[in-house]
Length: 195
Image 1 (cartoon, rainbow, N blue to C red):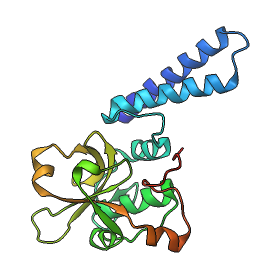
Image 2 (image 1 turned 90 degrees about the vertical axis):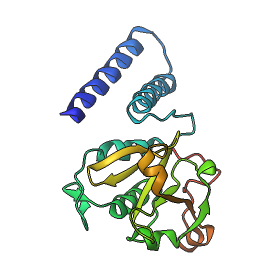
Image 3 (image 1 turned 60 degrees about the horizontal axis):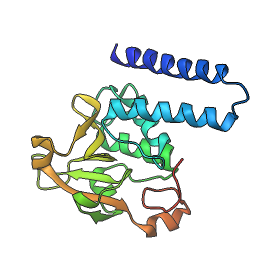
Image 4 (image 1 turned 60 degrees about the vertical axis):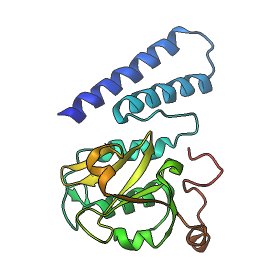
């Protein structure tokens, strides 16, 4: 229900933007596209609680938005049900064209640790929840918010939340060695724009 209302609101946002562009004669197509992208960024910023800059990866935020509310299912890897590592693997595959491992502990072996203060959009966040080893993973979005498949389903949570702050282990950025191995170049720490 919530997704439907949000989708309708986005539709009217885009419709209003298109109506405005039709009124202004001889408006360049690039400007109209920029305005629509700006409206979409504003909309997703409000929903996700993350300020999106001009360099924000819209593919990342659209992917997360599309999966919000997907139920949790241990071992699941589809929209019928997904667990945290499968959600992360799907996101990295579809957004960054990068095949990471399936288990959160194995994924941690592919990253260089990043402090909480140095996290960037698209970095990974790892948790040790009621465990001595890594038991949960999410994707950092900015503003201390991250997307993950929790027991309540795919959601956006805050690292400032007492629960996640208590169990936060480390942030991580995929090591250059793994990127070079597969010849990919659009991961979070790249200097190129991720649009």
